[in-house]
Length: 509
Image (cartoon, rainbow, N blue to C red; front, side):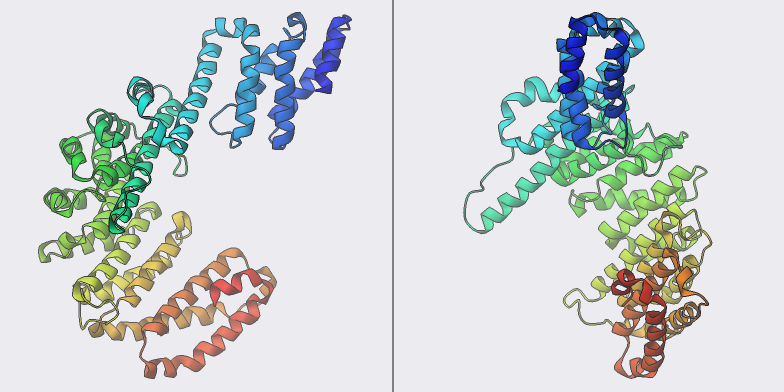
């Protein structure tokens, strides 16, 4: 507060305006500097807020915009510190009497109000997470209309995003309360807290805006960027888990968009289908999924990459959640042909295929051995396709673009699942795979200069050793003894090479 006192005194004795300007510029620069720590930013924002209150307004006119920019930038949604956002909001409150000119400019007015709306909605999201049990009085008259208006705000993605996050938090809280109620019932006691069933009551109003948000897919969106479309998909998934069969009548009509001529509509229909597969009863899902599978398979060859990506993701979710349908003889071959073909697609798509294959390997084992998961079955539904699948997974691990989207790791993980759940009649593939993995490890163990090893090299060694570990666990004792000496020698070579990278050794061995 020393800056504030100095600036205040300078204004009182009519010191040159430049003196105050230097102090204010220093505060605004530090408040917006990405290298400033939390404590420094908070101190600068507090000082700016006090300046707005204490210093004569005429001394602040020239730098008013800079001060307001420093305040508003620290209120933005991408600011990770809640303490900074709170301090910036307080500073804005202290500035309201002095920003008339900014509000007279339309663009500035819209920007300020948008930041304030997002900050207010973030508060509501946090309040719902912390104080769910006390919100009943406020839900109908305030929280519901405010958040629904936010979700429908097409022109401001940040506001829409916070509205969706609010209802995702409601669902998460009510899912937790369902588990607590079930656990309490098993122990013969009442639960400590009970659900208000806000999510179920809001289905008729909430589902359609979420589905409409899925239609706003942007083909140029960054894969790592969190946006309303992705948030809507997650919220639908949470709603399905929270409300179960009750969500089906509101979502089912939307699946008709899967045959639309517009790619955004096809993509949205697929996204909606994949999002609600964990929650409703399998009995209610079977008919819808069985009817949709031919179209889903066809859309893995869609002309638009976003649709192909989503279709393959939906297929992976089906293989994980509603796998009984996939193992029908009339469907299995078609699904496997598509999964093998999409292993050659863009990395973002091939990753979903790897996940689907891993899920099918585990589920085929469970179906063949429903009462004893530890016993290796003589055969399973994938037996006749085992060698072909493993061959294509190996090819996938060697793709030149396998580092993109974590594809190489996903392919090796699928390979590990295939080995882990390999039935007895395909045991020969385990031996063959051990030879391929040992060959790759031996080639990697020959390096001229260990000091030049990069993270990529070490990650690949880790994946190969994890695969070898799965093979050794699945092998018979007799076969393990045959390759034991070779495994030990190769392991010692790798240990020698990687001794300079201690942090990776625990992962490799």
